[in-house]
Length: 476
Image (tube, rainbow, N blue to C red; front, side, top):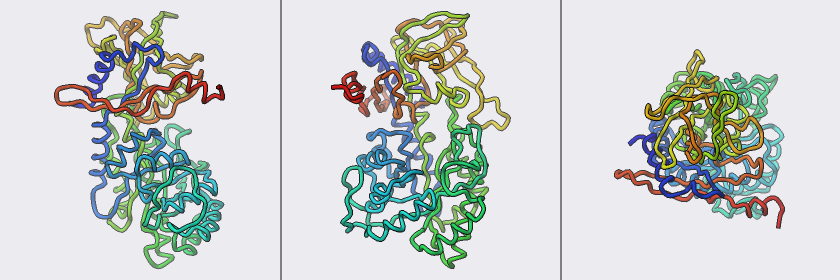
């Protein structure tokens, strides 16, 4: 049974359970554990070969402790970028030696805590390096008497952490400017092509034998694989130069980040981790010869396809020649899609109240190079028994006109009480809610489908109550 069939079983099981009869919480997010496991296995298989690997999941893609725990149990590490994410990673069971701490705005307290734990650190800038220089004189590993930082107590790592600079290779932007991290003026890391930067970096490493890794994150949604690979190649060349200057292999780890694009236009998983590995290896054959430990930081590509948001249709109306389907899923869960629909198109399927499939909007890629992240064009896949398709908008509950999951697409005639399933939403969509209109965060569950088609549920997050919203907003 493939993940599309498992998703169909999950939607029908939710309907049979009566989930959408609850007016307080008429939507839910679900994650297919089998699909997540398949993506983890594919990642490890794609990077098989000589040398060590540290595959981490980017916590920002799934700020949900039970979901992060799935990755810890699978032997992965975790990339974090805030005290909250670090606390979640520790709570989920990641050993500090398998945690990578990124952020362009780390405070002294956060840096001290990471150093005490023995987490791996990616240094964003020279001023941060100065802070670490000072902190290392007072932090003495597991025996430090310094005050603990934010997050739950955790046993410090017994392994010396990998610490090094985040490098911006300045190799260019992709199809989504706001997501591109390797542009000439990106806020992240040290610009490698800036005057004097390369020599400064080589000298910094030569003066500090404990700097033993370099980091790059040139991938993002809308980036072509050859662009990502060119960023990795630039940082590999820098590592080789540093090691040649100091006369030995001081830099022994290269963190190549994540950012593998996801295809939101169909069920196909493309590009795959194997295609990514091939592109990197073509550009940087020396990266995989066993001399360097390779770290990765994937998030969206591990989780997106596994997730579905399912919501009840509340009303259906016809305005200006279009069917407008009003649902309970909108910008509060699909924020990027509402504000940048050309960059973040979503497929939405329509289901009967009992969960039976009725039709799916889809979008095809029109960009010449075939990479994801281009402007979509609407098309339709439906059950022929559902009747003629109607030009439709699928809208959410938020009070602004752009609160749309899909615009000017074809769908069968919908009715109140139908369900919409929003595909490919396992990363970011229900773990980073937008609190517009004080709408509650939806319940989230994991699921597995047995050979008999029965769905087994695992709680991930309870639905937020109005009382919790009131307390969170300063009420009594």
